[in-house]
Image 1: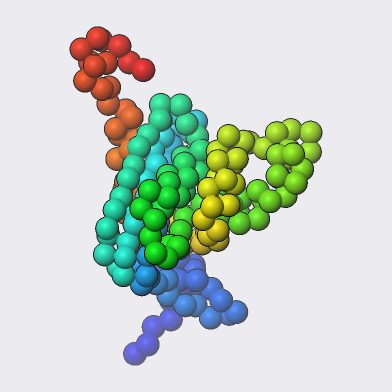
Image 2 (image 1 turned 120 degrees about the vertical axis):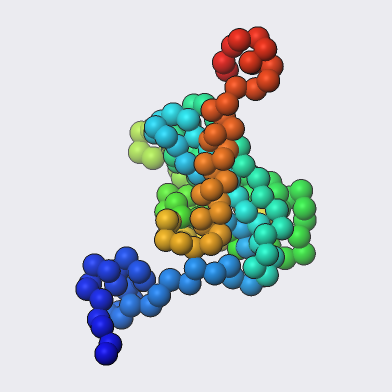
Amino acid sequence: MTRTLPAWQRHRNGLKLAGAVRPLDRSIPTGLVIYADGCCEPNPGLGGWGFAVYLDGKEIAYANGGNHEATNQRMELTAVLEALGWITENQPEQLPRIISDSAYTVNGCNDWRHKWKRNGWRRGQKDVANLDLWKCLDGALGVHPIELEWCKGHAGIIGNERADELSLIGREMALKPSLIEQQLGVRA
């Protein structure tokens, strides 16, 4: 007997496309792929970023870090910026796909930054938020012309879950005082 899932479960377990539900592909795509993610708790507050690099489904590199004074958006942007730095340092033969669960980051990198740059990095009467990071991303994406891809966060997508885990580890690293801070009895 075939059982039809309720609409709320179909949406949660897959993507709704033209009236049909297609299951999420949770596997790592072939080729060179980087998943990037950021976190912040509370927001603003203590944040972390992380990225994982895969080649044909196998993790080949990763990095993470954190900041005592962050926002979720800044950590999402930092994760992509650090991933672009990895590309520069490692000079892979092919440009990787960069995948993020942050619509802000993906839309900003692919579309909004071009408009903001034409408008002197302003939105109306105000400077663009996170201007320092957007200018760095604009420069890095000029060198590595990659169009970012969006994925659903917290949906069991292997690379995204790994990048999320790395961002949480980065946040924890920022939480712990360094050995020098412990010896001096201070906290940065």
